[in-house]
Amino acid sequence: MCVKYVIACLGNSLMGDDGVGIVVAGELVRRGHEVIACGSDLSPVMTRAEQVDLLIIVDAVDWSAEPGSILVAKLDDVEERYVRASHSLRVSEVVELMRRAFGRPLEVYIVGVQPERVEPSTRLSPSVERAVSGVVAKVEELLVKLQGNKFNA
Amino acid sequence: MVREVVVEHVTRIEGHGGIKVLIEDGKVKEVKFEIFEGPRFIERILVGRMYYEVPDIVARICSICPEPHQVASVEAIEKALGVSVDRQTKMLRELQLLADLIASHALHLYLLALPDYLGYPDALSMVDKYGREIRMGLELKRAGNAIKEVLSGRSVHGCTVKPGGYTRTPKPSELEGLSELLKRSMNGAILAVKLFSSLKYPDFARDENVFMAIDSGETYGLTGDYVLVSSGERYPVEEYKKLTNEVAVSHSTAKHSSYKGRPFMVGALARLLLNGKKLRGQAAEMLRDLEPKLDVLNPLTNNLAQAIETVYAVERAIEVIEELLDEGLKRDVEVKVEPRRGMGVSAVEAPRGLLYHCYELDDEGRVAKADIVTPTAQNAANMEKYIKISAERLLSMGEEALEGPLELVVRAYDPCISCSVHLIKVVKTR
Image (cartoon, rainbow over the protein chains, first blue to last red):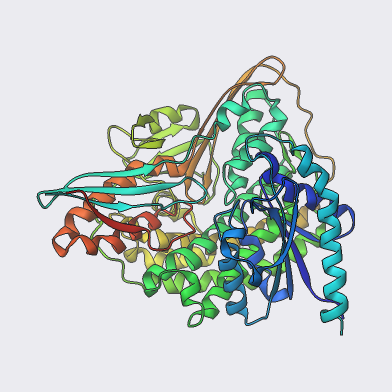
């Protein structure tokens, strides 16, 4: 039995690199994944809480790395300051609400991209655009790893 | 002695704002509802864009209510271009507005407003004791989100809405699935009415008010060609500037509105007051039973109005889906749109109240001028009025006593606040 997972892609595609999550969403959908393209509102993810065991969040995350760098981290292992860059509804609050309301041990991973420019623009900067295929690969690696090791019955 | 009671940060999506209450010699001297979010220049960004790009851009004004912005924009553009759409398109747009109302009210009632009344700082703190309520609220929101996903491709900032119609027609099986989801979510809507009708609403904010809502015609609805004012007037939406009379104020990047010199309120309470007699079904019965509790002098009862309206929205959404399925979904109903010079105004009811979109197009169909008036901006002056009244009445209880009540007044208007944690601190200036 495979894990029930949701990939939540966050971002505003009118704000330059902040929209990287939405670009990744398009790639993942083309590759057959079900994705929630949340825009700048994480709350749609909460409504799936009773249905999922694994949540992967894709977003621009500022952790002062080289632009285009990719961060893969388990939410419970990162400090809050690492995951609040783009959207003020804190990821940890949403996740905690989901876990406690439905009593499910939801696993959450962040796949983040260090933005170069967050400013009014419909284009990604070159460094972030080059990172898109890498982000897609990281998400799929994560799914294979987690489904293979822990979630497969 | 001069003191300030300061609300540092009260909004998230519609704008970043705060409240400042200036107290001098034991009296409330001045109240400011400060919206200090940087201007986003959406109206300016639209200038020069083709008419068909508008709905995707205006959706970005708000992630909670992109659908009202999209529907208002395409209707205004269609008026400017002299385009009429068919019944199916109108029904799908109504369904989008209903979906947004369900999702937005569910979020506000269960996760943002309820903690205030149950004595918790936020939803997370109350989830262990009120897990059932949170789950039912989320199920209700899920129904709204699911409709959004089917009709516009995604639950936030959908991308199928265009002048003349939709780029995708839903499948009958998708609509049937939505109908089942809505029927299950009705329990959450009814529970919201039970919860919010059992609350005792404080009366510190009671005062005469002016209300505005769309004239929805013979039945309760979210669209129309005229606006009703509680003082008895009725204006065509094209004359919206006579109703809003926006002025810039120095302490806010949102303009303030007034009608005949008085601030006014838009939103669920205004809609039920001005159109409530047109309701049918369970929502009509609930309004009849609970009308004494809907105190039009007290903006705090807007939360109860939202709950009753959620029942309406679920009932009506089920009805619209049944009608669409009965009539059969037609493909390729998109109307051909020819660019031309023109001007159009549209008003729809967003969850927080009246929303106006006005566009002037040039000969090629490019936007020459855009004007968008949001409900939160219209309510800003009204909120300021009731914050001042509340502060004056509660000041004798001490500055600390202002904190909770002022937050309550702000939240009653549902100005897109989500991060509702410890918003107020008292700052001594001297």
